[in-house]
Length: 88
Image 1 (spheres, rainbow, N blue to C red):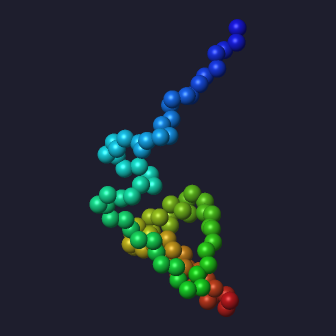
Image 2 (tube, helix red, strand yellow; image 1 turned 180 degrees about the vertical axis):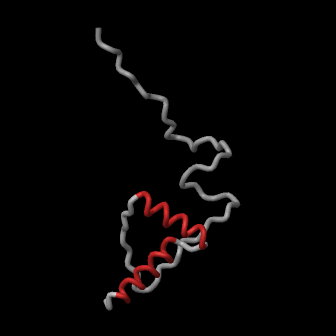
Image 3 (cartoon, rainbow, N blue to C red; image 1 turned 90 degrees about the vertical axis):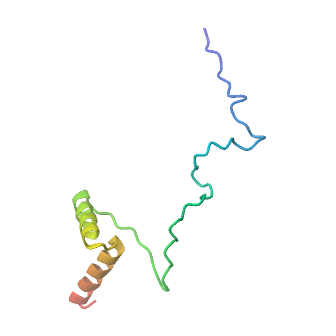
């Protein structure tokens, strides 16, 4: 005996706007909440991705929280000091 095909007709309402539940949805406009502005891109700024092992990342997070610095600030300073030490 073959299974009866499942139909999803009527489950999607494409004609009306969704009912307002009072719960903010992802991507919706904030209502009265202040959003943090995106950081301004610095002139000549380039971006890269850095992969860290879990323990190193944990240590970076702990240090950043303890010293009230961003990961960016810590890593930029460390890289600048390293490049200076190797005369690069």
